[in-house]
Length: 502
Image (cartoon, rainbow, N blue to C red):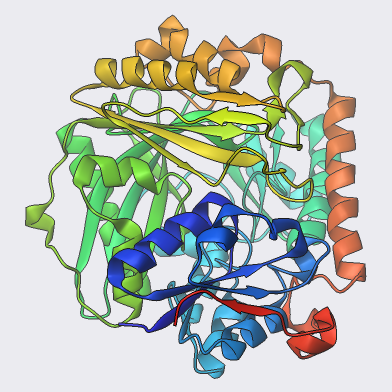
């Protein structure tokens, strides 16, 4: 087992990893930026190391600062959490070169799966259904029009190295294609440094189903059943649950075996998620992609299996075998997670960073809350708006919805607006309670929250692209080639390291 792990992340996931380290008896070191100086992970870590100020490109996304931080405190491993560097194969490759274990899949696997077209081709070779679409990267708008005519409208353009909805556009007719193609490729170039696109058939009311996998370096591979992640807004998940209300034992068997076959084919090691689209009739599913990291929604699976996924992830990275077999796993009741954000749903989900004046975190039977919030903490403006995850567990879906409603009703935060009222509205809706879910649920059932014009969408895309390009111009870490190597103390001015335990 590792002696010391550098946690190269922030917020609730940094705290989650810190706690797993404590359970394993491993020293936890939190790398923190100026904006996170007063954060809970920094307060609770065994050790901390300062990595400077400014935008994420200069801190949590900066290869050299993270590597130098790990070396300065003698860490033998780095846990990237999710986001930031979690799926950056160049960073994982650099860790290996520097003799530091990257807690995640091998860099070659991350690189392979990061190419969505190549991942689709792998699934197809294994006879796992993929959504109808282009066989490879689109070469032009004309080719996109040709493929779209073959598969039928609507279609969706996607960035080859995409994620989080960036570089994605839905196209309903030929006249829309040129504008959508230009917008998607421009956004993909700005966000990922690669403008390449591919095209898929767009299903109107599919479900988003994912399978959690764990694979060790000794050839053991297990699935931890499925999660339903269909409640989304603008391709961002809002509510996840396990099991899915509509997945039958027969479909579950096919989904999970497909996920394991894909993992085996690419030599996957670590924690990961294989994602699928399930058709409206809940009988046919299509492979989408593999997320080569821990997922935001991993607590849902932990609650219904009793497996500590983060601990297993660390143990696998240390070269140990899985601590259980597939036969030892079984679904235990039902679980659901609501992602709470510092946003105002009544104002188009505008971010609401600010000072937490008072807070009451819910508890009681079947409730778990993953958060790094506390009274007096100021939510920074420069990071993602996720501030808490409320997880409910119970004997069945009805009990879980009841417990989640209770928990959110008790969750009190003053000083900022949050998405809690929005989640309560979803939970109260008849369609949600009946399990009538799809990726279009918010747009269809919660229209008052999604009235946005094409001009607003275009403006948002432009702003996103400008922000990313600005980061690149200022030395943002998007590819290894763009780094300006410098030791930690040369960038931050001094080597600020705090040790709290001997």
